Image 1 (cartoon, rainbow, N blue to C red):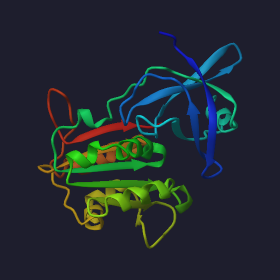
Image 2: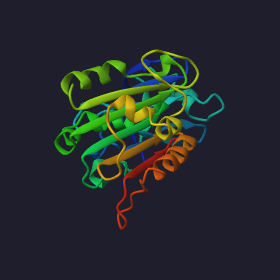
Image 3: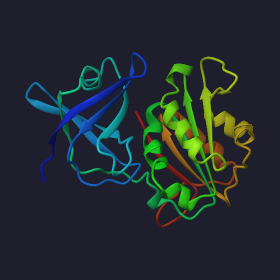
Image 4: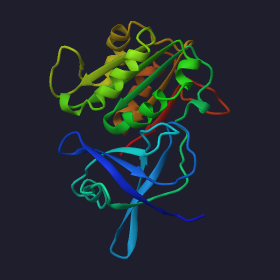
Length: 247
């Protein structure tokens, strides 16, 4: 199998000066919601690639990726300059285990993210699976400032489709807003504010939590959840926490 196939950018969104989404046409293998693949560009004599989660749902006509620009990075500044019609390299085989196939039976599903870690959860939410398997679904998205709470229209459409079963909780760490929790996710778990806002208890006998975002959040949230009786999920040792770090 070829390591790369050529894709074409068909659209882009500039959420902020550092947060961008690209829509790409590329004939990759079928993927499961929550998985990632690599994007690459030829830089000098080699193709430089990095993994990015797929935001679009399986079956969508185009692949969508959400990323932040790291000014000193070798790839993301160049990705942020791409426009419709530009070529891009895409790894043809998706990977990753942050998928509902790996989640054991539960009543409630919590999708907890920071920054661009919301991407795989949007893919999952736009499939039938969470609505067939869980009675309640909570999406938590933490960002520094309100303009970084992206994909609000997409989230609103999910809320309109599932008004009694879906809850969205934004969290802001560097500015205040009356619609968002303040601070960091781990503290909101520890002090009970997260479940109070959801109107739903964080009960390890009923819930599964999927974490995706920066390593500090994932580590600290795992510790806060462990104090509530949650443990990391493994195939041979089923638990209530699945995770993927973005850094």
